[in-house]
Image (cartoon, rainbow, N blue to C red):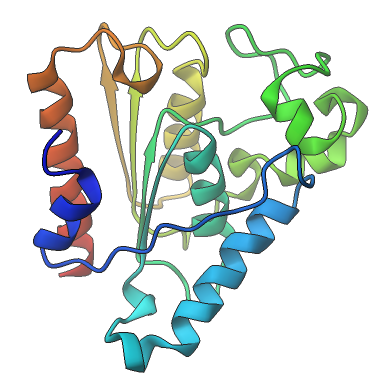
Amino acid sequence: MEPGPFARIAAAGLAVACVDYRLSGEDTFPAPLDDLRAALRWLTLRSAELGIDTARTVVWGESADGHLASLLALTHADPPLAGAVIWYAPSDLTATRGSFTPEDATTPEALMLGAAPSATPERARAASPLAHVHSDAPPFLLVHGEQDTMVHCSHSQALAAALDGAQAPVELRTVPGADHGWHGLPDAQAEEIFTLTLAFARRIVA
């Protein structure tokens, strides 16, 4: 995709901050979520000089990034986020979904927790966006490939159902024929997903 996604988001009139966080080889949960909170606080403190309004923040992440973005959107209150765009991300670390099982200590989720999710159930629940759904959640856009072999589509379906049940605003788009990372999709269809996602973000902050 040329120009790149960040350039296209900026060209649409939105400020872009791409945040680094500690990976599982560096520290365990909640360290990466703490890093996102610290980044948002830093941006808030410098909002005047940067010309931004962090009360209008829309987090946008895919896969592991999307998992953390979901948690930030559901748990950060000062300032609350304006919205969340989540592509094919885990939402539940406590139950078997697709090829993931909470008893497996070798999964990326287990490495993030520092143990198999079943061996540390409280931490697994704390790291599950599904457990943090509430009625005041910001608007969510969830997009997930129906043939995702890495993160089962039911993660987004369950999170959407929980948000809807809490009467929080949510849109769910499942994509037939798409694997993780939109593998298997024609370029035109991937472009369509990006375009609708950008439109959602712009609408939320308008």
